[in-house]
Amino acid sequence: MRFADVYRLANANLWRTKLRTALTTLGVIIGIGALVSMVSFGVGIQKNVTDEITENELFTALQVTPADLDLEGIMSGDVSAMAERREDAASLDDDAVERMRDLPGVTLAFPEDRFPATLRVGERETRASVQVLPAGIGLHSPFDELSAGRFFETDVERSVILSPRVLREVGFRLDAPDRASGTRESGAGSDRRTVSADSLLGREVKLATSVIDGRRLALAAVEGELPVRQVETTLTIVGIRERPTGFGTASFASDVIVPSGTAAEIPRLDFTSAWDLLRPDGLDRGYVRVHVRAQSMQDVYSVRDEIRSMGFSVLALADQLEAFRRQFLILDTMLGAVGTIALFVASLGIVNTMVTSILERTREIGIMKAVGGSEGDIKRIFFVEAGTIGLVGGALGLALGWVVTRVANVVMNYHLRPEGLAAVDLFHMPAWLLLGALSFSVLVSLLAGVYPAARAARVEPVEALRHD
Image (tube, rainbow, N blue to C red; front, side):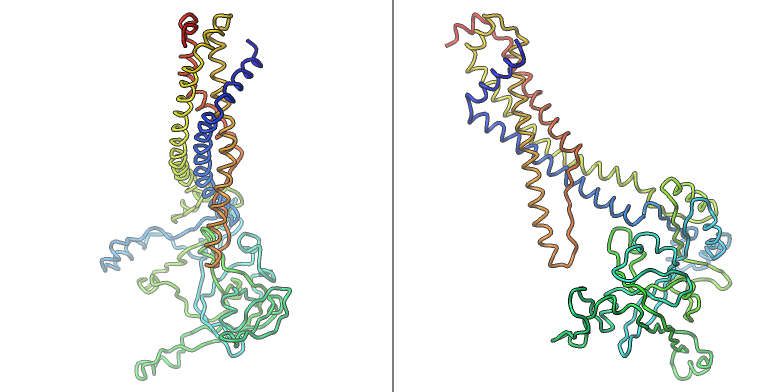
């Protein structure tokens, strides 16, 4: 029997019982829709995280810290244990940073450096944590794109990059470019001027830092005042940058950024961590952390090994890549298992439909075998019926899954918008998922048709012709 004849007979049998066929197909549609929706959710989360890390070049970033400390001894109050542990440890100082810069595959190496300061613009001021960065980081994400202006061209230019948040605290509100600048807000915000971002570029600000005043040391114990005074440094705004909020960008989420060469000339108290207060006399602890950027993913592992051989601890997000993939694979498997259960329930409906069809068509099957139809022809007819249900149900299930994910995404973003959060797409349907789900639907349907097809093929022609 030709395949065209097999398909015609199978199609006619399905149309003969429209309601039963539609309900059976609906079960497959719901199963595939659930499977695609759930797996696309897991794939979407994985894509968002991976894209965020890739866009911020975090796979080529390494964080270097001093050798591990005896935290148990420190927490118990034994500070001498820390000193003993660190006497032979490599110091994360300027010399170590310079050696890291000279390693093959390294494009950038700079220490973690922050200090507290007061930012003053006219009569308004606010406190902020100032981050020190080299001009070279401007070529890398997330510093290669600013809201306005540019990044530092050299390490010694007397410039500063501010965030919109800190600008609001000193009396400025950034407005859209198409609205008039220089106006004042009314009501509660009447003391805050609305300006364009470009109008603030080139404006001078003062950065006030605290230093030890030697002349007040003698009077400090008597008068009870701290022997410190403030020193002001005038800087020019060259850029405005939103604080990054993506995965792994917390190390660079600062409101005030100054070039490394300029920061070296700013007088300030030289401690930024409680560990500095616990440091034993004469022990040079060096920097708390050093950031290193490799040229490519291939260079990350060799750079990591070289730095570890210097006696430092290295954290590379690339090391966690395989762990990420395993975790996402587990998530995708769990979500896919739920959808697969729904699909297998639908397959029971296919079995039921096919078996019922055999009982109704026993005489017809007997006639086909009596006129020369083989068992293979009978099996092919039932396989085509089951496969058609799986194909149509799978295709419509993909459409259902797409609609469900779009609606869920719109609802989710509707609730995120009042919180001031950026819109996200938590669902992703790659080609492999669509083709895989459709193939899986057809495969499960064919497997569901194995028993009915085998049962139909075993029908004896004589007994079938006597069947009423």
